[in-house]
Length: 326
Ligand SMILES: Nc1nc2c(ncn2[C@@H]2O[C@H](COP(=O)(O)OP(=O)(O)OP(=O)(O)O)[C@@H](O)[C@H]2O)c(=O)[nH]1
Image 1 (tube, rainbow, N blue to C red):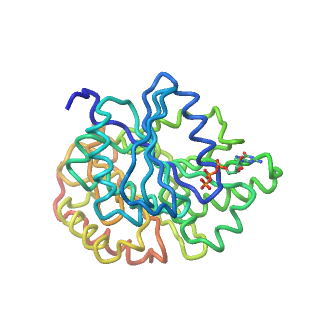
Image 2: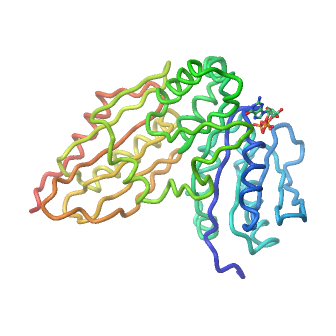
């Protein structure tokens, strides 16, 4: 491969139909003219599953269309990515704009589950666009909107020109009830100057650690059936027991778990371990070292449908280590 920049960072843009994904994308292109961006767009309703590469020559933007990504996850999306690195080996960032009804975790899973893809691409963040005016209604009618919010790292509340301050507060509250750990920003026609959306590094251990620093102890939230449960505890966990427990949980009940994220203290290990789930896979990365003499605290959050706190708590307690290391 000619590109020395591998793995290429990937940003997934999700959000319900008409929320403003294209508007944000246009802003991203404008703000990043110095970068060679590849945009993979997938539109619901395309008949062709065969991906098609379209070169838009003006600002080194490539556009690819394929069928609905989450409807065609069985190989076609991976083939599109393979074709992409073959035909355009040198570029800086991949943006995947998913159809409004796609499940973003299915897209993210392609980047964390496949070793060949991981050698070329690295998930940077999942960004969800919401329509400030219509969110409340969509939340009651469309389960995928809740899932998109639950899975995202950043939610951009778009169309703020169409709501007043009181409505905006309600929208923000509804989002936080689904995903209390998500970063919220507001935008008009996809325009915002709060964060650099292509450099969120949401899957980096450092960023997860930062985000968890102020995690409220034993927080629970709920929105209809979707709940989040946070646990904070000092007892060290046994790495093998925990991996086994979480794997079984995700394999058996993967559909109910929208997101798991934790900064963990495993017995006998000097580093924090970051655990994240994407669909049925759990990934583990090394975080920073525990500071000498400081209490080592694990923090973990589960977001999903009808998750029972008592069972999660019991499962975690069963993973406590039998040994104490000094
Ligand atoms: N009033 C207002 N209209 C907006 C704003 N952002 C986008 N729109 C309009 O909303 C419509 C949908 O915006 P898009 O950016 O195309 O949304 P999308 O999520 O890409 O839509 P799909 O591709 O259909 O899923 C367009 O007509 C936009 O002009 C906004 O902040 N305020």
